[in-house]
Image (cartoon, rainbow, N blue to C red; front, side):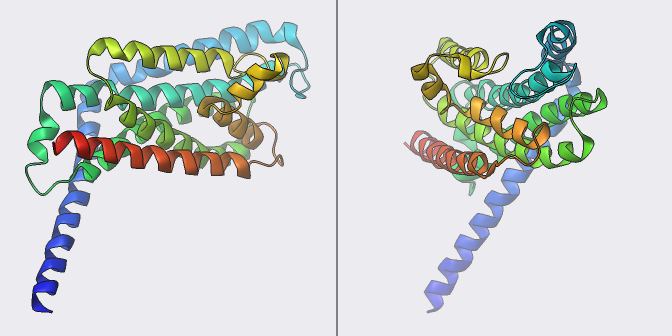
Length: 269
């Protein structure tokens, strides 16, 4: 019994150290980000331009779209898409390039796991920070859309938890994908995947205009599911969105497990 108590205490201390490291990693990344705030700020420039040029400029010629009437229908349709795309890009960018450097180039993680810190703690800390960054981008753009009258303020409040869930899923997906990267050139595959989803996920036109087989394929992508979820919450209140929440909870959990397993295999071999 005494040996078992000692073992349990040791495990508890290790878990405590791992949790502290995870939050310490988030704090470290925040400090680094504040020193390079211009790079963070530029993350919302492109989607803002899309929203202003297409939503306002092209929107006056579109009219009703996807059941949204009124002069600002296209802007209201486009705004959630730009918000979710910004969340995706912010989360995935933070969960890929800098992670690859720490894992393959600088050897930061290899040094850290020599202590009581586990790969799971690294995944948790980096995933939380990527989630924070992606959510921050989305909230800024959502606030702009709300100020322009394209999203109701009350609905925008309900949209924020959805952004956190979407950002977390993309963050852990990015971490898992990074473990398979062998060189910087491999990130071209990530860019192709992100660009393809951006173009095809109903960002600019409803997917109902696609051929049936393409609609089915697109409907399973996280960017499309995020756009549907946010549109249901922010511009079509009352529409069912429980399925979208379940989708991201399940996918995010799977990505977290995959990232943890891959980090453990790489850092403990």
